[in-house]
Length: 309
Image (cartoon, rainbow, N blue to C red; front, side, top):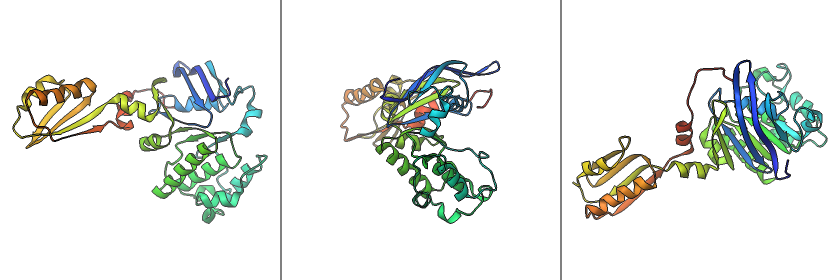
């Protein structure tokens, strides 16, 4: 594994009986970058993470994490990783402070607990048992546990689930600071705005395979425009424009405002503007709305029956 990459996954296969949850996935996470792994439940995200974290053996292919084998080198690798706990992963009657002190004790050079708890709004619930914490407070504690050991690589699984707006933005700033400090982050999230804001690279999985990969900007640019608004004199023969477009594209006029909606690539946009020119129309304004990462995600993923992992 090259020093430039924190994670390299090659032709990974994970099976549960006859069901292949991950089918030949390859991806890399460069050091000091944030990669968002997206996909519906059952897409194979959790299985892939479990292999990278050393909690599950691959059935084919493999992964290298910080230059090590997650299974064979598990003891050497774990102190260098930060992994968010899932619900039920800690003793429910332990307090937030006790849990954080326990995990800090596993690290050679842990962060100071007081400032970390203050940053994540945990000071006021320090003496509250885990089972009595709200969902958002449990998530903030899980994030603190993942960060307390000063990891080189952090796995964040739905890091802001259940958090209020303020806590979510605090978490986003923390992730951005981790990247600035050279820490690598591999996160899963169902919040597409979160992925679009935080990720340097996005990998979209569907039914155990990679459906698309790229930066958020690359993915949205490739998806094109979904609405083109043109201002011109009213009463143009809009039906002749509609005839030039695909059945999935809608062209409508509200006096002087022409809206063309659909998946518009460069060719379609050129055809629309060419039509206005051919009509001799005096165009006074053109506006477009680019498709979002959510639009791209929804177009690539599909809900299928099967095992949810």
